[in-house]
Length: 226
Length: 60
Length: 233
Image (cartoon, rainbow over all chains, first blue to last red; front, top):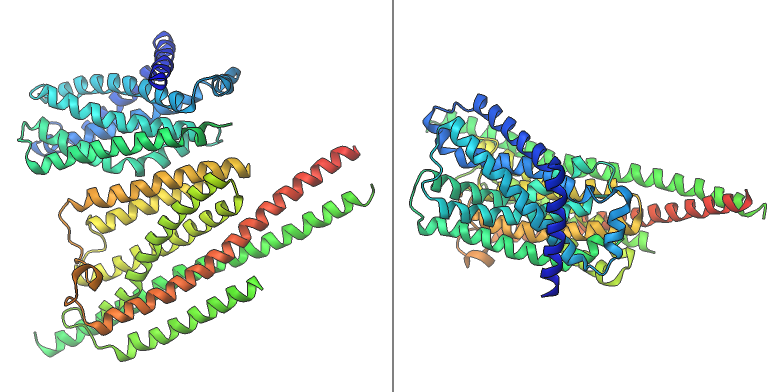
């Protein structure tokens, strides 16, 4: 479909720009490591209880680092009026939004992979016990966060207090997704069984992703029209 | 439970009930007062701007 | 004419509330297990219903704005959201006071409390967003989008947090339980109070909407004055 092809073009452009400068990735990655370090002071890495809350720690780190990535997403188009150019081009607003979301998705996944490595080292956790399921959960949750981040990145791009408004707006909205991701990650890191109860959380992730992607596509023109 | 403790419990219950009612009404009252103040400020501002546009029209 | 209606509505709400207070405090008996504190419920439940109804009404108004472009819908949506937020705060505070007596704690991470708190945060963000945008059409557009996202999310939040263990009392209204959980006199009292609070909320919304309209008029008059000045100069 044309929209998908256009979105991929936008995503490829964003990732190419990012790979050249690596500003978002460096900032988000460094931020993630610093937060993990701070957490290691707040929560004793050797204690058993910390292993139980490992999922929560990880997803908090991803949420905070994500805000940095999303802020840059649309803000990078502001100089030289690139955003106006994009909006006046034949590109549909929905493909622009989905392209940004896809770029966010890839970048956030990179940050998550890095954080997982560092986390494994700091907290002495073997996170590779259930790799495919963990990857699946990470993909589902990260897509949800990326879509919401792209939508609100677009919404707040022209505001004075963009860096403040973006986190304030997205964190309450992301709570059901973060909750599900935390519960599932905790189970997988502890190598627990995926019971029927756990599968409910997977369904919550799925519903969140589908509903918010649909809403984003439907409201893309509203949010992005100049 | 002995009657004395029971009486104390009932008294405490009543006290908290009034706290609850007061809290509810306080919140609504604060909002109504803020609405009233905003309304007065807006009315004053409207009058000011109306006067400004009238005086801007008259020299023409 | 409209002001008379608002004053009349507020007066009627006030009278009904006064009558309800009389019945709540002096006529209805104490509840068997809870004592006097249960009477908070007569404000707690209607405030909760008013709050959440407000969020849904704001959703509908936002969609109406987006499809028609008429800024009146935006004024109404903002006012409804603000008043709903006030009553949600009443909901949480009264619930907290009740919990202190019955459970001994001011707060617990039960699903209704948590969902209500998150909804308050989402709509507080809505009001903050509105304050951050000066241009009326852009403000209306972006707030409408946020209102839609917010309301859909509130529904998802409710359902997903519900799967956690809950400490909050289960449903008591007979429309949900089929009767038997609550004395009919008390249940009717809840509905009467709900009516009174809805009337009060409507009066507040009408006042607030008028203020939004005046604010927009001031804004457009200022632009006219600026343009006129520039013409003269």
